[in-house]
Structures are given as structure tokens and as C-alpha cells.
Amino acid sequence: MDSYELWLFLHIVGTILWVGGAVVVQVFGALTQRAADPALTAAFGRNSAWTGTWVFMPASALVLVSGVLLTEDGNWSWSEPFVLVGLVGWAIVAGVVFGYVAPSMKRFGRQMALEGPSPELAARIRSVIVLARVFLVLLFVIVFMMVVKLGT
Image (cartoon, rainbow, N blue to C red; front, side, top):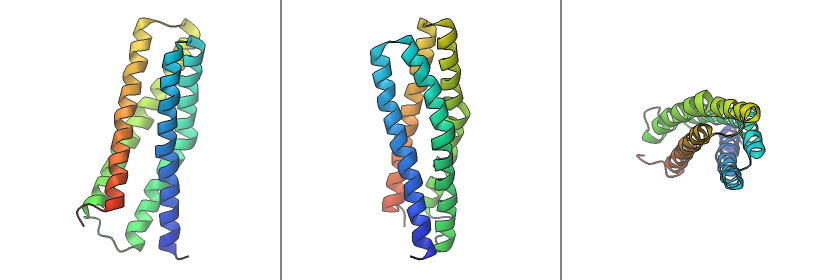
């Protein structure tokens, strides 16, 4: 195994953890909504925030670092469309998900545990879940760009 293969392996592992984990969170989010249980909703918010911080954030960092190393080691140009889409997409998804979605879910979980359910809180939770779904689709677009190396 050479260094390029190692970076590629780490890049793929980070992507699997980040994208696959996000799919699983969406499934559990849908099941939680369907259950309409305030305690379950509060736990989901807390658990989603914890997973974002301790699983998705390190996985996304691994994706970024290994992607940079792949670009350097593989003699890819930084102006390749798939490299640019990957970097810009990573920054947008990571910024929104780790800067807004995860903290919001943590806050909603605490609020639900303290105050109980309310139509306003339910609407805010739904809107953040929809936003997370949009960014999950964006992650799939980025993965597609990386696999087919569109523009090369």
C-alpha cells in the first residue's frame, strides 16, 4: 500500500461514517416524528447533537484532511472541478450542519425536556430536519462528483 491508497482509504472511511451516519439519523428522525413522544423527541435532539459533535465532525475532518492529502499526493490540480466542488461543498455542509443544525437540535432537545412539546417547537424541529435532509442530498452530490471526477 502506498500513501495515496492510504489517503483514499481514509477518505472513503470518513465519507462512509459521515454520509451513512447522516442517513441513519434521518431514519431515526422520521421514526421519532412518527412516534410523537416528547421524551423520545428530546432524547433524539440530544443524541443527534452528540453524534454530530463526536462522530460526524471528526469524520468530516478526516474527509477534508485525507482529501487534501489525496490532491497533493495524487498530483491532482486544485482547479479540477471535482476538487473545487468537494472543498466548497465540504465547507458549506460542515459550516451549516456543525454551526447551526447540531447546536439547534441540542437546544431543541433541552427545550423539549424542560418545557414539553409545543406546536412552535415542533415546527422548528421539522424545519431543521428538512434543512439537514437538503444537506444530506448535497453530500450525495459531492460523493457523486468525487466518484466520477466530473470535469476531468
